[in-house]
Picture 1: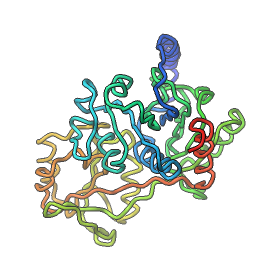
Picture 2: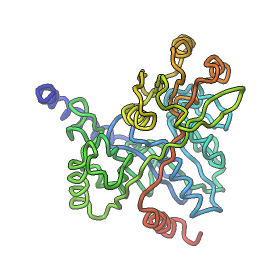
Picture 3: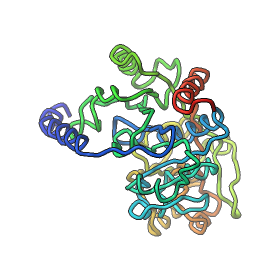
Picture 4: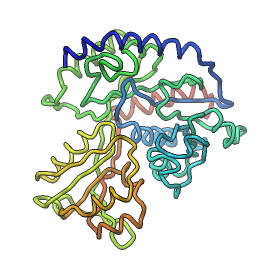
Length: 352
């Protein structure tokens, strides 16, 4: 691995140079609104961005209940990514994309717009007189729209890898990019767990960020998994984890980083799990449904991000065995988090 990184390092330098040129060439525009926040990553792959975006908007709603909210997403994996679209609660993931569909289902009061041209989406669908609070989904490297606040997520279970950019590492940008950020959130964090797989490295990286970027707000967020929900007779039925213990289980997911899902599932059911990983944003085809439903397992489990891509008709093929695990994100420093958002509001929204 070290030898491969050494060989790829010159390509990483070229990547950084091209990234810099691209950034300089993009003309940025401001939206006709008062507050734009971005949620993004330094790395490729999953960092728990979708559940955190849902949590962020719920937090904003609690602090600014009289404001409207708009989420701008690329809608990766959905056909509307090319044509722009407004997501409804019953929109299908093949059009809206899995993450926007999931966001809309969890926060139906927010307007969720998709399209690779996010500026065009905003102009087409937003009543600009409403001046909504805007959240850019996966927006840290999206330079076309100006924002007031950048929130960067770092997965506590993966951190920054080798610290190198693509292709030698999996960073989109080096750590120096945090100069333009306002807050860093360590997601999938387990407070006080010294046997954390990357505990010493996490402490070291966190200390380095605090020393080199003293103005950054630092937060930690955990992912709390609810009880599994299973599809039977056209509706979801909750089951206790004890019902799944010592049973045959097959788990699948299409995530950028599947390890936390499988690891947490094994911890809950206390039994060996047969697994299958698909690429991130994978669209399940009929042959995939036939394969999955044919598995000789008492329970078949996936993530909430995956379940939105499976139609009710296809869910019925599993005859009550198919379920998903709902996830809720929570920032540990709740009072500090709410005060951070209030300070942002006072600065950009005035009296709210």
